[in-house]
Image (cartoon, rainbow, N blue to C red; front, side):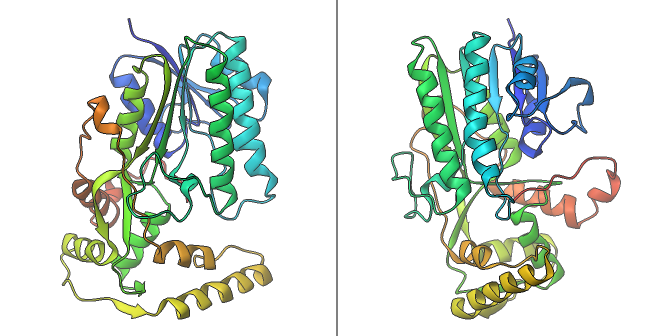
Length: 334
């Protein structure tokens, strides 16, 4: 018999794709989100993880709860929202699950809990978050593990994705691809730094699979392999666009970082966010390469290769695909 599933944050980028796949598999799905779902408005129930009353109402009758809701951007104000949404929100989800006798939770954490980690860090890597997002995701994981420990029949799956991309997403990967496509891209550093990524269809497929996991705690990094270096990514994008694979303009890291600091000062003076910041330059230059020692043990196989996911995204965003689907929503994320 198919399950009744509640997806907190189901109106967002990953959530929308997850809901699509769960419905295709025949499950009954409810979206709990403070924002109305553009793709599935008939499944939407207004809910905020900070409001335990609305949360309990939205989760009623569910067998499995997914929590994808988070404050995640670099410029969240006030900063207390990270703790209110990510940590207190986790406590509210656990409280509602206990009240409603829900035995299974799937929580999307993040590789941000590792901070600037060594290349190919897996699930056993030390947790050293460098920002509020990573810190509060780490604390939220602890909240869910405490919930798990209070019930021997409970199931908890914690999934730590790397940066997720795909058509209609307006996060960092899109901004990077857009700069490359427009010819405005400048390489900070030598371009040999490696970036782990995940295609939205794949991470949603893995999350959907997690609903079938048995009792106990399960922890996974999620990354689509093989990884690309920045230079390899530039060449792939230009090849997909039918352009020459010429070497982009390089700027030494120290100069790029100084430009990011200057942009932060300008952002404060202008009171608006700029596309460049010191944190973004630092993250761009860093190698953020992760791996998983556990995903393969579940039998999950990603339906789309990383290269194909990039090619699909480029075709949709820059080769006319989006012009044919103007009614579909866009998603803003980091």
